[in-house]
Structure formats: structure tokens, C-alpha cells
Image (cartoon, rainbow, N blue to C red; front, side, top):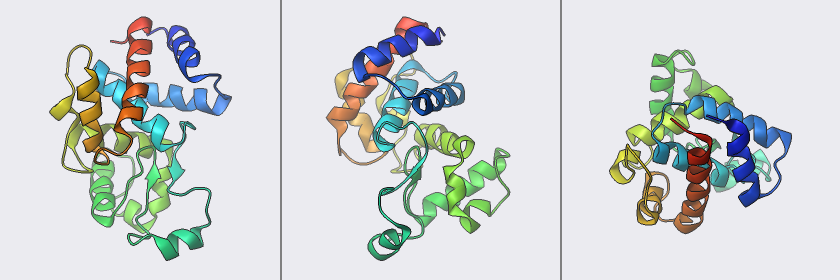
Length: 189
């Protein structure tokens, strides 16, 4: 893939990118390499939205102190972290088992130290494999998105149920279309 072409298109649609955003994109592009076009596009769109365009792992309500999360989030300490905002203890337990099996951590490590989900390699694995296998809501990327070729607007809109119902589905669909075109222009395989 021609990353310069990819970034030219992304910048033309989303504006200038800071160095940390470019580094985040490059890390994720390597992590999702080999994904079907629509899957990769939606993974980046979800990350763009969930990280408030930083393309870096973030904490849920990152602008607020930990004490706020402890007082206000009923699933504390299993609040959103990473690129996709992993939440709830059952999802941390699943991520722990899967990441340990992939050699990214020791068994029990994510449960003992949930902030480890903020490590880019772990966060990227959770993003990709979690969306592909349906960890978050039981819905997989393949439920709505094609394994070959481009996705339709409706397919991208429906894909939001993989993460969070229909919340911001239209906005994230817009991002997915931008990334899909960038990938096509750049020769994604």
C-alpha cells in the first residue's frame, strides 16, 4: 500500500494530522494489515471516533480524573480503555484470555492491571480481533461488512452495532467511507 497516497486522501477529508496521529495510523495500519477492505475501513473509523481523532489508546472520559470514573461508572474499574473502549469485567476477562493466548500478556495480567489495555499492541489486538469475533456485543464485522470489495452506506451504518448500538452510526459511517476510499486509492490488499 502507498501510505503517502493514503495520508493525502485522509488529510484532504479530515484536515492536517499531528505527528502522534500519523504514528497512531501507522501502528494501526500494520496491526490491521491483511484485513478485508471494509473491515479495515471500519476499524479505523471506529478508532478515529472512539479516540476523539487522536489515534492513540485513551481512557473513557479521559479529560476527567480517575476519582470521577470511580464515582460515576457502574462498571469501574472495568471502564473504557484502548482504541475501542473495552468495558465491563467480562470483556476484560475475554481480552485477557485472548491476549495471553496470542502472547501479548501473561494470563491474568489484564485483570490484575486493566491499564495494560492502553498499550498499543494490546489495544490494537483487542480492536481487530474483538471486532472480527464479536467480543463487545456479540455481533461480528462479517455480520454486516463484506469480506471482499466495498461496503454500502447501510452496511457501515449497521456495523455500529458491533460496538455500541446505533450511537453515532451516521458519523462513523462517514469516516469509514473516507478511509475506504483512501485505502482503495493507496492500493490496499
